[in-house]
Image 1 (cartoon, helix red, strand yellow):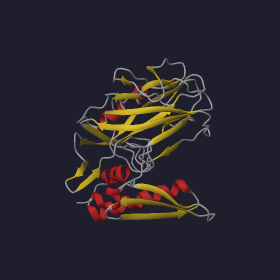
Image 2 (tube, one colour):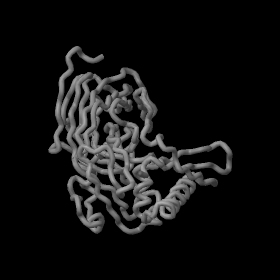
Image 3 (cartoon, helix red, strand yellow):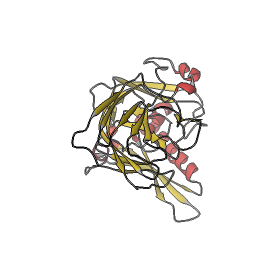
Image 4 (cartoon, one colour):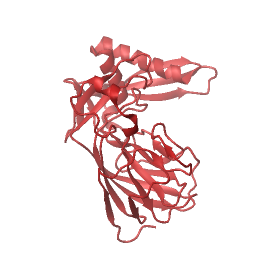
Length: 317
């Protein structure tokens, strides 16, 4: 239960870590009900600067990716509890980037060369891909999670049984996230912030950006969650009203392999964007990652399943 008067704490850009490691000391110790204000750098920790050529992507130091703010020690949180994280506010920085990284992404074999786009953010409500294509800004933290009971240092990519690099775009302001607790205090960290992203993050990047954000913490005693899972509760409002406004162009791919169906649905959407909207293959792929949603349409009609990719028509002026 939260105290009558909650305290506020801050974790600045100078307090971060690059790996999950349960031996790290907490950056701050708080009581349930307290609020923590974070300020984090974009995912490369400043290695990529606005305007850098795409060739810079090949020299990124992967040991310096994912600067996470934390860990946060929440008093009273014990293994077997659930940590409640209420997302109060998210404010992107002035710029962001999206890139195709060789060897990564849903269509890595289709796009072997590095490619990068930069976006002005600031106080804008959308990011401009082209003068007639605008992506709604809907900020969230790509990585939110807790350290686990497994010793040693663990990469942030991919997710862990403590969640982490979950890239769930509906973790926006007003949402409450519930995480399993493995260690005393929970040992929560967050970062890897995105100004926008579609479900699937198909090219492996959203609009990566610096961000300031505020979270309120609570503890659900005995609120056991299944390892390798997390829950979240969204506020009572439409999840994506700006995307729904003009309808969708959707492609459904059928077959026995869900991953290949997902690839084919995105490939066909890219081809449609090239033909109908004169986008380059690279920009079409980036638009899919930032604004489109992958969904399983059916998974019960063995042996062939359906995966659909929805692109909101509202992005086109």
